[in-house]
Length: 385
Image 1: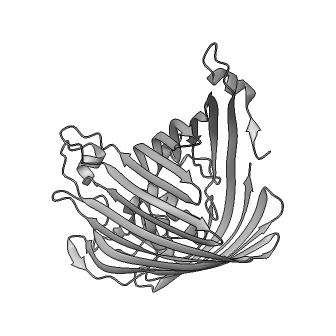
Image 2: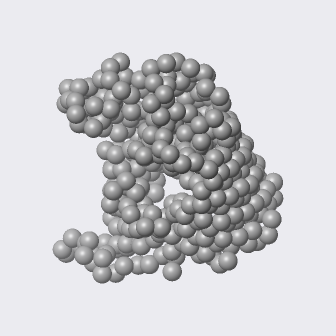
């Protein structure tokens, strides 16, 4: 069933003598997709390795990452609730946890007031990520949308205190993530804010996120220093409903500045990203999506050299057919120009190390050096519970 009340778990979570109404819901998504990719490049540890050409892959992302979670609420009276969420991510093809984290997607606890909003503490999505979700053509489908190129790799933050409040057609978000560095409150911290407005088919969302990024030695614990850079992103999105058609688009300004010392954990660059898309509910069970993404990289520091690399683009055509309320089939054609799919790889250092918006070892797609782009064709299934 879509929502399952775990009575035994709820009883175990209630304090002795408590009589408040408590519910715990088990939920999840299981996705599997088979994908053909051309101009694929073998790598070892993010470094060029022998072997390139077309590849056929199975993955658990596609239209949505596989995950399961627990969501709980407790009625405290007066319109106040205690809330928590624990949500992990796993690979359907091999059962592995994403990043080795038990609850790497979300893990938070807090209070929710019907009148004043929600305050939560733990690992959560950033304010801008929430505020712009409804203005992205696939709402951050991991295989089809350059999510990291848009939001950066830190769209989830640990050690976060977040406020969310909805007042009529307006929803507000703001957060602060603690850096937890001795000697510096700022190093490793992050903050942001966002807002959305929806009325009469029109929607607008704005957001700003900033991360005080550590260098590699500090991030891995090899150094106790407190030097930091800044990864800054501001975005605006618009949408409009015309019957069964939703039009949307937006702009994102970005500037990632490296720490003064050491090796940066993120690619230092300045860019402007644009996107546009349309969702069409062609039939009650069939939704069609077309989308375009473009990143104008004005400068990037690649291997210590400041360059102006070719600007990545990505095009998407997606069909999503519902077999039932829980299970759907999807098919997609994706083409990335001047980059691998999802802009994971935008080039290589002379050493053969891949360069992209993510660290080389965290990238999924690597294109053949010298190729103009990469094509992907995906067929998949998703079930929701």
